[in-house]
Image 1: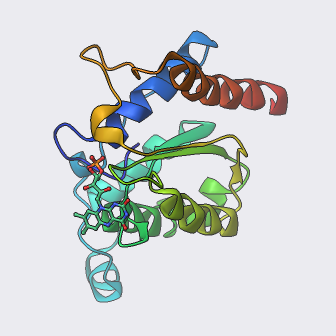
Image 2 (image 1 turned 60 degrees about the vertical axis):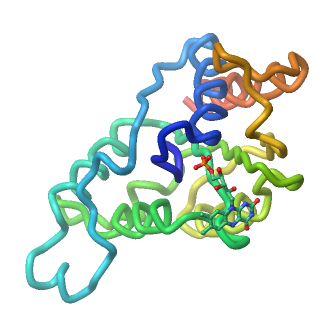
Length: 184
Ligand SMILES: Cc1cc2nc3c(=O)[nH]c(=O)nc-3n(C[C@H](O)[C@H](O)[C@H](O)COP(=O)(O)O)c2cc1C
């Protein structure tokens, strides 16, 4: 999943390369577009009056079916995006069967990458997101990529122009797939 649903999103492009690495390592990867899930901004009154929205339930179900999360996180004002935070907050709400939402995430693994036109590549968004995911019990892979100058980093086929960087990014997906395999 990407914290940006923008057409032409550089985070989505970067995520696609990580996913390619995971697929090559044998993982079954599902592409999730957060904006496709009808998830209003979290509101406790709305939840109490109408329950967890169907879109959030569908997103919880999608996450439940997977062992790991690949997340590309754009940086907005030094943090990660509202789209991503809202999705995580709904994810953490109680499940339809009464289990806690946190039980859904606890013990899953995740890899984080980010891309930005700036020089730091959105690294601060990763730091902020890592803290939240670890609080929820997610094991976050140490390997990551913060891709700076991202508007000029991809070729027409969606690969990174620099083959070394392309390999490093693909290896993040590979390493996450291997970790999931080792954890069983
Ligand atoms: C509200 C807003 C805040 C932003 N803040 C930052 C920032 O703090 N650091 C940064 O590197 N880029 C920042 N950007 C630029 C984004 O990195 C840029 O829009 C990027 O293309 C977003 O990722 P995407 O291409 O995947 O949509 C900001 C953009 C917006 C719209």
